[in-house]
Image 1: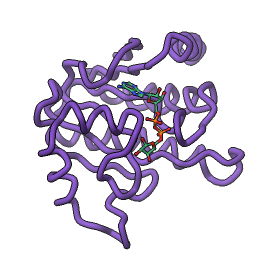
Image 2: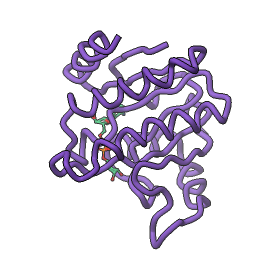
Image 3: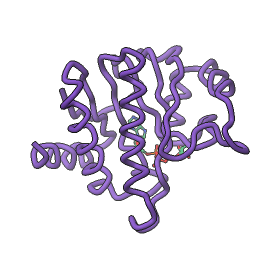
Image 4: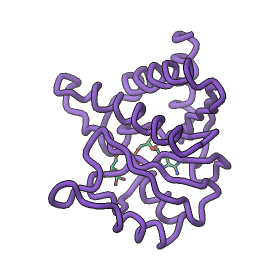
Length: 173
Ligand code: APR
């Protein structure tokens, strides 16, 4: 089932929340900063334990990694790295779609019954919200066709973003 809410993702009582991380995966600003602040120092340590797959890279763009949620209400944090938006013609749509697919797969593999996403890449990484939302709604809708027991929540930080997701999710039915 798909839900769209407005609020702070660190407060959601779901099995997993998705973090819009960077490839180093040791925290940052935006939702990454909020999740690390709310989860506490153990999250930073758990991220340090995630093996590097390249110099200073724990999670390549488009991939996802899972850690416990520690002080968060959520049991898990799924860290994914969205693309930095250039012009939409440098593989950004494919990478963003992969973030949703890989995060959903990781959540299902770990027995999560509910997972919440922020609007990945639409902040610091500059992805236009409506374009990113189209990809998010498409990927989640596809996933739910074969995982109808899982609840997926889009957690929008602003009411403008929420309205965009609501409009697009109606179109996608
Ligand atoms: N709850 C839900 N959504 C939030 C929260 C929060 N507490 N804080 C911010 N957001 C929203 C932003 O408003 C935006 O819509 O999350 C969305 C993603 O924005 P960013 O956090 O800037 O993430 P992104 O654009 O993917 O850039 C990732 O930013 O913080 C750094 O370390 C991070 O380098 C990485 C980059």
